[in-house]
Image 1: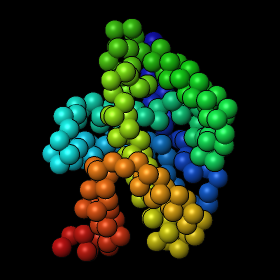
Image 2: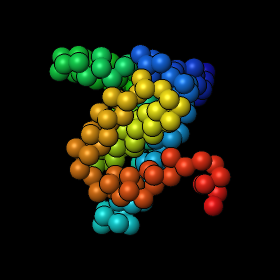
Image 3: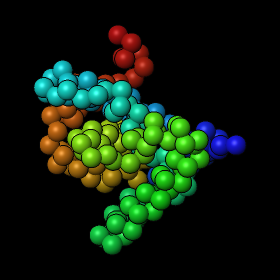
Image 4: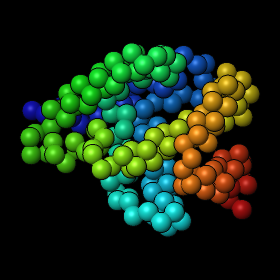
Length: 193
C-alpha cells in the first residue's frame, strides 16, 4: 500500500498565513493550484517575450508540488523561516527530509517521475526561480485581496512582497505585473466586459 496520494489530499487541511488574521482563508492546496497556474503563465511569457526555451509542462508541475513537503512540516511563517541563516539552513534540511519522505510514499517505479518536482535539480535553477516568483506573486495577490476587504494586517506584507518581486529582476514577472496584475482589482462585472 502506498500513501502518496492520500497524503497529497491532506494539503487542503493546512492553512497558510498562520500568524496573520485573514479575512479569506487559504490552504496549501488552493495556493499550489494558483502557483501552478501562475508558473504556467510566467513560463509562456518567458518563452514568447523573453527569448527563453523553458519546458512549460515541467514548470507547471514544479509549481503544483512546490509546497507538498508542507504536508509533513506545516506552513512555517516567513518571519520564522528566514529569521537568520542558521534557521534558514536548518529549515531547508527539514524540507529536504520531508520531500524525501513524501517521495518514498510512492512505488519505486513512480519516484523518478516525481523527484524533479520535489527538489531543485541541477540545470533547472531558472525554472525553480520562476516558480519562486509565481509563489511570491500568489502571496502578493493574497495580500491585495485581504487589503481590499479592509484588512490592514497585510499592508506591510504586501509592500515587502512587492519589493522582493522587484528585486528578482525577472522580465517575465515585470510583464505579468504590468499586463495581468491590475485585473485582480476589478469586480466580476468589470472582468466580464
